[in-house]
Length: 353
Image 1 (spheres, helix red, strand yellow):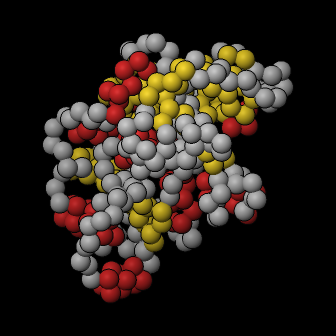
Image 2 (tube, rainbow, N blue to C red):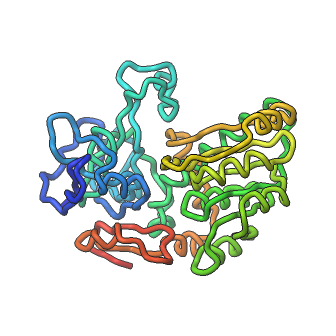
């Protein structure tokens, strides 16, 4: 079968490779791959900046935003042939740490976890893949065109869960949310905010293309001005920061409502020093009981929350979020950005529609 592979830490090594068909072990599903999403992590791996091969192997099958259809399943697996499924990315560390021992492997404390398509386990960018039944999530058949969005949605489902947990340290009734960044993570975070009945604002730099329209179709408000000015005007109760841009991070930290919560989901690239008044920022955080947290990855609970959120969403909006579908045979195009990209997907079943 065909699979998209790289030699991690070596740029220019991504290629379509013939690899053996998977042989599912007891308790595993055999799945026909339908699609994989392409995100910033995949691009970093392709550029040779990130990633680890399985032990004893040179190449890694990439792809962690999965969608597939069960080809075969054991009688006691809870799955049937034809089920639409996504595979969970992370696996707990073998020690395990306290978090992993309690199935909260997204919060692993020792870093010994592994991840499909990223760290030491082959990913889902192949025509067939196998997955342990306990790390597969069934999704509604109506999500066949957009189910590849479950994994990125699980990331923001976790972020919202963490925000609620922090807020509930005391009375918590947020009203206004600012999401910085209108990429897939930002837009999906906005979707979940709208589903909670909140007033949602989204900030991004672009003024044209699909992003402003996707925000408006959600019923949210789009902004493209300076982050500090927008945040100061809105004074949001909650901020979900999805750019990783240092200046934006500090602008929103300084401009929340009292008892505000800022959840950082964007990973910064570093390398650009910033001047800031750390003492003033500290004073504001303390005197206003503000909270700042980072959130990444997801566990099984968040995948199920994500699947439920997508079923409740407007399918045409979700479909519009996927701005390009590239067949596996033309995989290189998926890693070449175009001005109107939001989410790019590689199709694995020979279709490009």
